[in-house]
Amino acid sequence: MTLDAQGRDELNDLDEALRQILIQVGDLRPSEVDIDFSIPDRDWSGGITRPTINCYLFNIHERKLLREDGWQLEGRGGVGAVRRPPPLYIELTYLITAWTQRGNVADEHRLLWRVLRTLARFPMLHEPVRPAPPGAPPRVALPEDASRDALRARLRACLPASLHDHPLPIYAAVAQPEGVLKSPGEFWSTFENPIKPSLTYAVTIGLDREALPAGPPVLATGLSLQTPETTVEAGFQISRIVTLPPDVSPAGLEVTLPETGYRTTADEHGWFRFSDDLPPGRYQIQVKAGNRTLVRSIIVRDPRAPKFSTGYSAVVRDQRGAPLAGITVTVTGTPLRAVTDADGHFSLDLPPGRHALMIQHEGWIERREVFVRESGYGFALNYGGLAPGDS
Image 1 (spheres, rainbow, N blue to C red):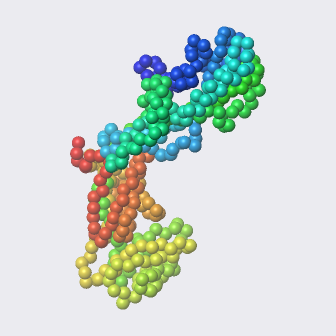
Image 2 (cartoon, rainbow, N blue to C red):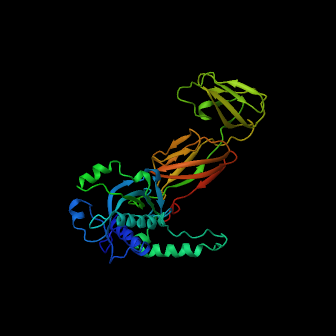
Image 3 (cartoon, rainbow, N blue to C red):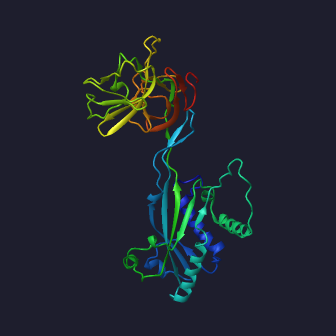
């Protein structure tokens, strides 16, 4: 919580909001009842001259149940893009007690009950206004909306500007069991005062964290993916089609074509071939590796047909077209992973179909869906800002 130009901060503004709610909504007149945020020790209580509500802020901690993981990307596509950690949700707990000069218990209980009734009306102190989605039907007014809107207007009038314009929701809860003092006797003995009946009032406010430069937007261009292909006579090598578990040897692995019934095994180098009568075409193969069955597409090519390039390559560049090294590219849901070299190149072995790629760069993660069609089909994948070569 940072100080603004006037030297005020959200914590003191929260104190003021609580004071105004009790005055304007709870009708606790300042001429009759004081509202104080001091430590309720013996010296303070000895100086009371009229009925007083003490709101002592005794605990501040993070609400871990509301914590979010990951980073938020702001300014996507611009040179000034930044990464921001998700907000921290901080719970501030007040201990509220009622005091009178002569310890009039009945008056203190009446004051405490009025505070409880007032604060219980507002489970949320602030909710950012969100525009209705495009095409949404207009909201239908209900009979009870008028009184609810009037109450919200009274609440808004109690909030200082820093809370009224806060970008995140502000929640509130009163008299909840998790806010009760674990050892009230020890607490009050520290202040040299007798145990007092008290209310806990917990306010949860989001705290934005500092944004960090996201670095230059990553651009992946010229991505070319191709299905493994060869002739029946030449055969295939398992390591070029599937990624085997590190503890599995290719020797003796069974390879099948489920739709045809063809079956074969790989040699000690991972090479395998099917019967010469297998016609050219596209097939799904199954490789049994340990307790896993790996499925990939292959193309059995007609030896009389022209041979296509079998490179599986891509180039990752920054916004100015310079290649980026060390960029990790992962195919979601598979063990396939590649890292760009010094020239920004990487390779992936993907069968035809739809695939989700995850591209990681210094904590910045981008996900893109690609569709691989026929052998030799190429496409460009661009994201993150300016096209290569633009300034």
